[in-house]
Length: 359
Ligand code: MRU
Image (tube, rainbow, N blue to C red; front, side, top):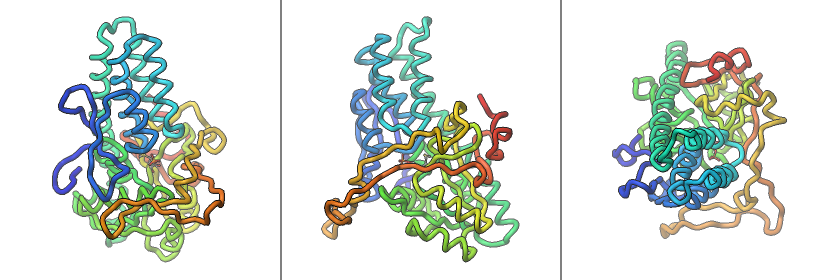
């Protein structure tokens, strides 16, 4: 997608051919700054501190992180250590484990004699695959938006939570891919963007992306969604996912569940858009089984933004000394999900709906 009219991706091979460059998402929307990842430690730190974030992008960054690791130590023990280092960075997004297992399996196969070349080749391939997958999610999901427009004959209002756009993937995104595809295809639409406290991925990242692409949108406080739905201002919700069970329970940024409850109460269709690499086929009960990342309480008690003099500053917004908790994700049970938009099509959020897509 474009930034200031220039096509960009979130991650790419640096000019030196071995390092990896990423857009530093902690600086958006105020500055578009790149960061170079030259070592395993750089890649792990970038994932942990959310320089890169969003399940698909975390997976691709981890694949490049392994490539950077094998440059320094291509032994089997070194690869296994690197896998564990990267896997420990963010527990909820299952694409991380999926990517690491996939790269490690190739590197540890007996027939591979150049592990460094093989790791880079596979990471490049996974980045390209991610783009194709997200584009396909966009095409399938756009049909839901088109169909809503045909039915209502007016502008389609879509509500989304967090950032599941191109910044959460290599390009296109998951939940925003259908929005881009429908918008580019001439369907009149408007997006309600949940600000997404505590880290504000909606206000900072989703709004930035949509603005750069010329998609009409409005940022709303996280708590506004129910009110908008009660007043007929939302035609459908589309969110992403960090991990979805084989039964269709969807883990996504905290607050997603509350939107699904409000959507259910108001008869608003609620879709999750995700690549099949986000499905954890080993799990059946999302609430009980999906590990929820608990992040630093400082993300709740403090906020970062741009001061009038242009400086990026962090300020305290909570009563000093009050404890805060920061679960980063929640699980929306399958019964509240109207359908799952995947690269292979839109399927019911049920074991029967998902099973035929199992790789
Ligand atoms: O903590 P983040 O920013 O990595 O979380 C990302 C999300 O939860 C997004 O909503 C998203 O849907 C999953 S990634 C496409």
